[in-house]
Length: 401
Image (cartoon, rainbow, N blue to C red; front, side, top):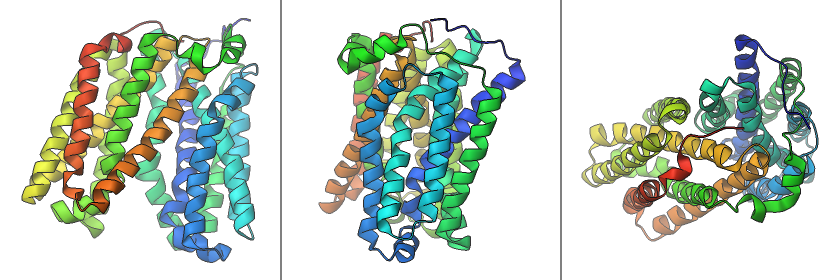
């Protein structure tokens, strides 16, 4: 099966990849939106806060469990069609959730939306890389990661603000309508994209066959350690910023905005480094992340706000750089035929890392050791640095897609 694509102008290629990335932004925003509006949603559905919180856990579990099977099921279909269908299903389920008369309909809508999550992210990055010129493929591939990262630090707060002002149903419906509009844009901008040669048979080979290359296993381990370490602190960043640095209220909102800006810059730099110096970029990012977290820990102990706040921002930028580096390494090491299954596994590893990191942070917080969390996270960063030094070849330059 041929994988040759109709040539695109640079402007259309950029617009298409940005539209795909914008849908990634909406998907993650939709996933986390109930977190900021949990009391409002509970009141609107005549449910408890715990039940609405369950919808977030349910989404994550369904997304993780269905990522590989759904990606394998979609392996034989045109990639443009897969992306558009995912966006449409996600948009419609957001509208159903917004109009839900009760908790049951809300939970079902969230579960169906989650079915699109893993397969969308598995297909999106390989697709935008296939569109790009060889010299900028890393930069193009980083855009999907930027979309997902930006949702956590910008999409969710903005959605919460809209929900608080106009109602949670309006906020959720707005995400759905934007997803449907972008589905139309993607359908018009992307050319037909048949699966990569051998993709369907590779998908049938399963996870074990996909992870056979040692380099790919190294990338997955780095991802697991990195995400676990990061979310051990990020989950409780509001509490740490208040207790350790005295940053709360509006000042904390500003901090999150600056943190988000640094995350976007880190993701962008990672795309550029991936095209030029991927191994050195990974090692530098791991070193900066570890050092920044040590500084955050010291600043928290000394209540040195002027030192701790910039260090938190640097940490955010370094983490985003490393996340994109791992995603692009998956693409390079897996090859075109197995890239989507590998990305589905990468997504599962990421979700497991979030859960593990949150649990680790919760355990330390419960033991009244919140102040030590940045140091524990720095230990994870040191492990990532050691893996980057010893197994850096897994991140080296090579053919993409």
